[in-house]
Image (tube, rainbow, N blue to C red):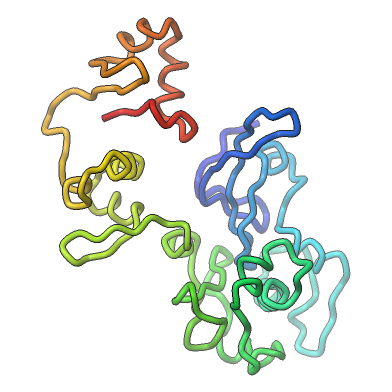
Length: 259
């Protein structure tokens, strides 16, 4: 199976990040966080993406089990990236996660008070207000993440805009300017993980997004202390350099990181 990267597309799913879950055996497993074209976020194992077992979120899977036909002609599922079909499924999934407690992601939407405006009770009104998404990679996004689905608060956004607007993003303010870690990383060239670790260790936001290495060699922090090189750290831990590097770059080993 090939390596999965952020931005990879698997049918209706686009990979936006990575996380970890726990198997029934108690062992950790890596999961791919994916944005479905309807706007839902799900975590999927790499094997299910590579094999094609998982192509969409659960809500969209329910909708595609039947051949929906309505007079507007947008509801027919024809197993393609056709924008017309995508627009209808976006509307159906939006209403489901706000109105149906049986939907898996209901607690993140309807369960916390997010609703769909009454004018969007019928698909024709939704289509007239939103139009069609500019590309298959765009999905519906609320501009104010705490607001409802209304014409004034919604737009079509690509996966990167969606990721920047997630509630889980860590937003920090520097000189009166607030941005999430991804945005600060893009602007400063400092890795997102580096900024996050600095904040966690008590650095001020100003220092975390401004202090570079100044030409000094990288240093590596492990539970045994600070090391000037990967080989020296690996030797101290009696592990392979490749193993040490995986720990340094992993999100699981909090005490292992690169300065």
